Image (cartoon, one colour):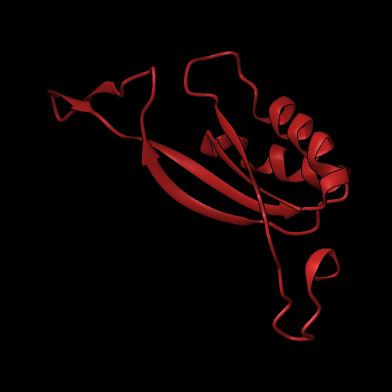
Length: 112
């Protein structure tokens, strides 16, 4: 099993969710986060004053997937979140040792 974490632009969330549904992913966790990478923030003007926004709003997705689903999920995320600009995001994959469904006690891939 793998834990996949993706950081994407907020306006791409619905497209990404639909793409994940299309490859068979039924659930994920979404958090609103802020950060920066190569884009290093941006400038905005508010009431005539210019100021730097160092941290850009992003969305963090977390989903646990079976090993045989990793490549399909990675490609669905990559294609749905793509804009071609700096700040499109990142996808991280980590090994997941165990998962347990609290309601039933199922463990491993059955819990996903």
